[in-house]
Length: 230
Image 1 (cartoon, rainbow, N blue to C red):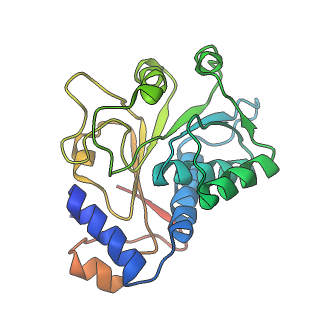
Image 2: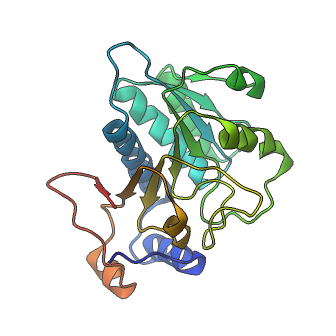
Image 3: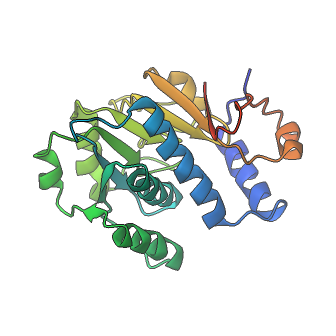
């Protein structure tokens, strides 16, 4: 059985990837975002009726960076991603990722009311908060979290459903219930509480020595696939 990580294990693995194996943040972000786009394409194939618009909701941290990369790859795959990126950062990495989206003619929606009035999205990508999230949700993000909690549109959460406790899962007052969860590197403990239709692992970059050190017992990827169903 693949190992499900607690919060400290997830953080320590990230530190090892950066410090011991010399991965850069943007390198891991590219691999993560591409894995998410591939998982979405597998679960929600392109439609002949052109209903291929995907809303990608990005937060200010690494999870949001994964979402920006995911949006770019979705556009390259033939989808029509739309970005909702309400709290942008001055960090040059995120600025560059956002710029790449703009240069790929990915539209940006600024107003939550415009999102709430749109019902034609094929999927909504939840790239707001990652495994370092600690409740409560900040006021700036309450409207988009409430939208995701009440929407009937299928949701794809990147690594952690936003607002969930990384170890214990959905908060007592209720939370996002994604249809697709894309775990990165290795699934986190909260994924045991995931009850959606699709669960993929995107992490075909983990060095064998690191996998053995943490006893991850990762599943085998088929052929040249970058994701594997769990």
